[in-house]
Image 1 (tube, rainbow, N blue to C red):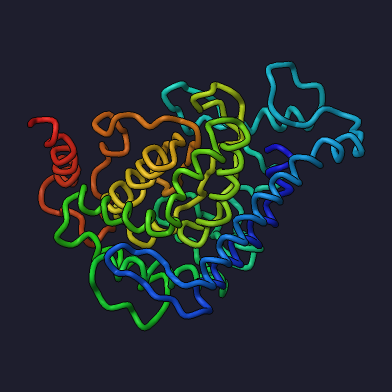
Image 2: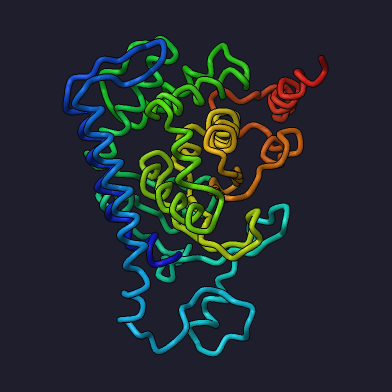
Length: 366
């Protein structure tokens, strides 16, 4: 990842924390029909935080080059290249090339973190805002049945409560009195009830759009065109902001993007907490994957492809990679998870996915 994105990470955490505290501390008037947040103080705070974020971005960009010159490194940065490795560190980096995700271009991915614990080691890992949350990985955490345990931070619980309130308003159900991840998953299952895949996706899209200020999509398109800086910055933001929902993530370099360049634009989720706790492939596909892809591609104008691995419950976000047509997406060929409470247990587990494919193809028949 470039120096400016790495250096800006603490600033981004502070800005998002200010926004979150402003929304939760002061009285708000919520419009249940449009989902917009009103109130003079909150509007001013959000505008001020956005301005601080933009100024910080420009300041970091302006000072990144002088900082790099002052450091005067004695060797070339460890970003992967086509030249032959000349040191043990470069050899180790080359061995870390990941072949687990083979996208349309078959690009390679290189981990951006050199100190990741070995997959066979049990370890605790801090993550999310200011690394205040903790994930406990067992020694066999890569196996499909192994479970990672989590300790949410106060900031994560506040963000969780905010998102739960949005879901409860969208599906017209009472807000749970207890704020916990179990209650969050229960709300997600309520969102699925009585709705086809398109209906489930539309609810999530509506919630995402309600999180933006009016005209936020147009501002995003102007600030973040599809280039190296935008893709790496969005990968860094994703690693910070959405960790409360999916667990620890790491940013990796990859050539799987529409630019065909080696860019730190891939976000690898080690073991998705949402998929682990729900066990539902349909929830993953309809309420996360397709909804998030549609939001970034259609609203933000920034290509994004999400590739979940339903076997080990990991997942990869590829910023800058245009997703395939829904009928050709490999994620929809995976049957129901046997641990899911809503799985089809009579006969073939894939019957529900056949129904999903039929629903997505239905509009093309008319």
